[in-house]
Length: 325
Image (cartoon, rainbow, N blue to C red; front, side, top):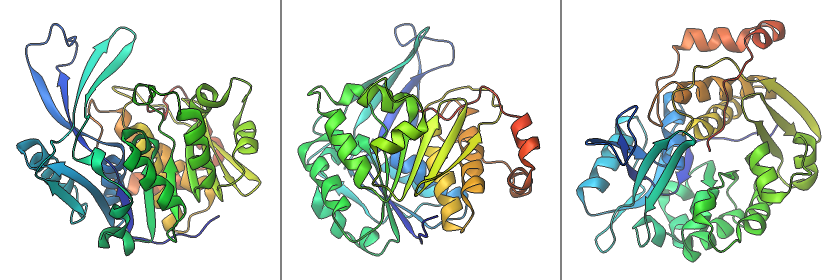
């Protein structure tokens, strides 16, 4: 398994999310609660929860939303010294619209402060002095300069973890399949969902092994098969760990949590199976809450789960899940 060191810099946009109260549709809601939502800051917060030195690098507007985001991420123990305040651009906003077919998301981020990020962001001290850079496909979709940022990072000296994190609404130009396949195959560590891979690159991808054949480049490839299992390829060797039973309140954010848990395992030098288990445990924390960031089990409980026999772990496998769609 690849050896990586900290600290981990997570670079990407975080927005304010406006969410109706539980059980209400957006059209009916009289009140919206304010949350913080961003794939990379989610990962940074869960890394910090695990005791990893995590940094969030981004840009926010010089506005109350931007200040609120920075304060909330910092309160989780994340280093926010690499966040730039842009006086000429606003902080992005998203609005969640729950419904019978799932939750739709409406984005108001065009021209946002973070959409102006570019390759120069990689020169920030918070990135240059990190041991690992974590990026997602969301950043690649925000603007040409953001896409150039990801491309430059993957050509740079720092090891890169890349979560495909495909959001179809952010790719109206239809470029996602080609761009995300290129980026996913060039990263040192790549995370992708099986359903996500099928949507992007074809239904013929029947299982994790097919995805590995399509993406031979990453030293470590993690394929998440929804509520069923996750498989980590360490070179050509595959390790599969089933998901555990989780009562799902809201799936958004669970993929970011899974990535943070798995990366924590790698940083600790854990073998692949224990890193995958830690990914599932961390994803469960996100699945159990309506927001993106939920509390981890206490350390003794986590240790108990990581030490469980294979049979005992498998006995609790069920339709929880690590999807982040």
